[in-house]
Length: 134
Image (cartoon, rainbow, N blue to C red; front, side):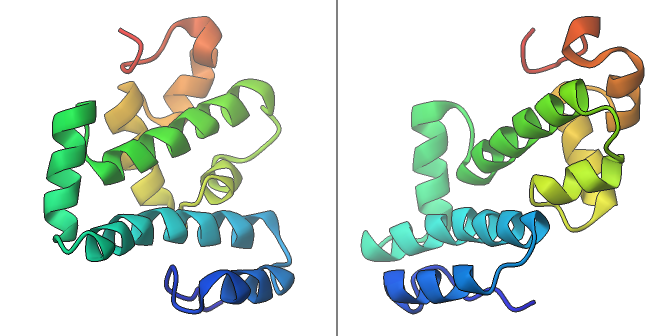
C-alpha cells in the first residue's frame, strides 16, 4: 500500500486516502508515517531542517521527535500486551505502526529494558518491568 507524504495533497488527500484504508494495520501505518513526516513538514514550514527541529524538540522535552513518536507507540504496545494477551506480538507490532518485527523488538527493548516476550512473561505493568517508569 502506498502511503502519500504528509501534506502532499492537504486535508482532501488525507480524506481520500482514509477512504481506502481497510485494516487497523493500514491505519496505524498511515498515522506512523504522518507523525514521522510531520517533523520534516513542520521544519520545512519553519524554514529549518528536520534535524534542527528534532534537536530543538530534544532540548525542550528531553527526547528527539522520533523518540517521542516511538515512545507513544511503545506505550500503546505495552497496553495491548497487558490487556490483550491473545494477540501475537507481531500483531501488536503492526497495530502500533511497526511493519518490521525486529525493529519493534529492538525499540520495545530500548524503551522498556525488556523484549515484548519478556515483558509479557513478567506480567507486563503488573510485573513491574519498565525502564521508562524508573
